[in-house]
Length: 299
Length: 299
Image (cartoon, rainbow over all chains, first blue to last red; front, top):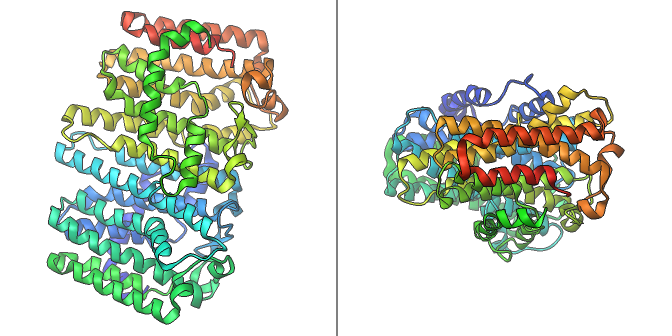
């Protein structure tokens, strides 16, 4: 992440940290083990791309920040739960995540499974905790955004993608299957961030259609860049085991299309994302910044 | 379960099965593995005590069945997810559940973890899928019931109880800790069934207070009877490994209070539950039936 993008998105990231902290029981709440484990992974130095995307999407349609903030917290909890479970020995069996030992390495498998469950549960619980006296329009928007998130996390989204990922290990899959896999595993949640943030911010149908196009493009770009980084950077830069996808025999964009073509795809997708934002004008500047950040990142 | 209670609650159970079936993608939906695993556990012959409790609670306050049915499905999904995860090798390491091999024995650990995740996700997703045109009162009730469920499934409820359960293995815990454990692990979800069903059915504050007392009593009774059965019945009757709690060095009501006293506790709790229902009159007859069923069951 460059200094420029850090600055441009800094206030959004700053808004997320205390909100996440307040949305969870304190670390010493009973039973302590689980709260320590939940906070260990949630505050492990993630870049907060998903919650920032939620906030920037709300902003792009003129919504107030407090109306989208709980949703921003919920998506980061869900992203973190999915990382904890994906890293388990029975799944991807990863020892390192964001440069730190994974949850099951620190707390053991049972607690890691439960910490993931706790984050998933808390995400939906948080969205159902509506302020007393919230007007009907806002209650309905919250419910709609929750349904979008539920769909994205289910068996046709996040979970389905992980199943397909596990099943594709060690066998050849074609470009179409690979795209389907990533649309489910990475794209669905990123898209839910954009669409949920926009719904909560009061998007019109036309806004929502533009932002859905934007979301599709950055979702795919995100995975292409991940594959490029996995193939080209070391563990120090990535904060996780490098070259792991190749070692596990997993299909990647680099494996199917080659490094050069994968890089070109990412740039083309960034262009599609920026084009979709144009009619929204300067309010969507930060969404544009995120599209650039996703494609130009180095870890 | 006696023939009499089966008959008395039969139409409630009959309402649950097709609703659960319709709330899930078909077994051959992509990706098939996960849908097979989800359905394997959800339709494994469970007694449906929780969803029946939801429906009977809605009925006890005069609510229409269709208003509580999605919540009934959600609690059964959550109960099933918790069983799948609790049975994992890293947790209780159980091979049998309801007389059938556990999920990880059939589908492997990775799929079992994801099947649990999928059921938990679908439960909250289902509650956010509200029919178009639902009036504001009913939308708010649904949101309130969802918040009650979220609390019950979180780190102060279902998950906290499982953490405490794992941590109590092989060490002596006293009667007070044991009660805290079970209020979290079993009681919280049973209580959410009753309170959620009552909220969705349009309960008054007074009704809700009575039903909360009822729920506390049956929640504890349920666990006491579980411990009695674990100590006295064989695997054939239980459909799961018998005497397992004792072998694992787990604290049980029978271990702390002895068999005779544990049986007396269950009967006393049944009395407290029935007493709480009295002011509700005949509409609460089926809740009374459930209290009797919980205490008199043989598996």
